[in-house]
Length: 289
Image (tube, rainbow, N blue to C red):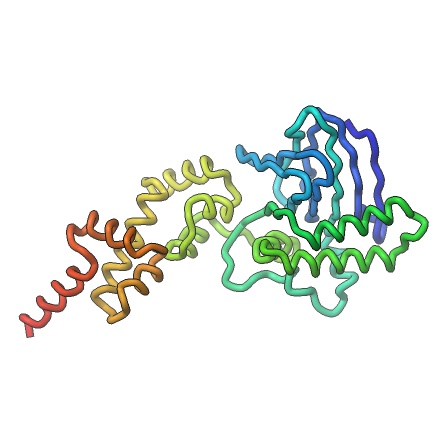
């Protein structure tokens, strides 16, 4: 239930909103070409998409696009009101204020294969100060004009570009201008030999972990963990024979971040350590000369 609502429009479209909600509340995002930055000023909310639930506590925020359906926020604490500040990004508004060239955060990232559509942003001091500035204008609406709002839009884009989540926010936001969607297999193949786990792969395919595992098994007839490990070990075996690179570097290049784990996994699969595998091959080659 909405018990207080205020907003500022920019170029005839909702830009900044402040909403106070009394639990129980539920809001389903309409499918539209826009992205939203939601800051939890008071209380907690729960973001739901597919069968994934993400809790957003006070002073944390959520960034998401609304291109796909099924996204909702719910109350996660029935004993307190929820107060949310929402900043909305419309592609035509952004193109209008950046008439020459879109900033880096709005451009399609290079070498990033991902359908990620949301990102939780941790408690960030600069973002907090930005929100405090917006609250000042809600308390003094007579001071607000289009020039002020344009500055606030540019400011939040600059701040988001400096957060630790900037790369993922760029993926989410750039989809407003680069709507191409990657297939499930394209995303898997692009990250097969990177140090990315199942949870992160699920996020990049824009699926919950359970849905990701079901889709993976359907396509590859194997579990994600087993398939990915097998492919990484097979590539490592090839590199051990075809290159003189250090075993540590080969392990890293094949997606392993721990040499001990790589060695154990390799021995479990090939019944020999990576070092002895390479030595055995070299000895065999020398005898054949």
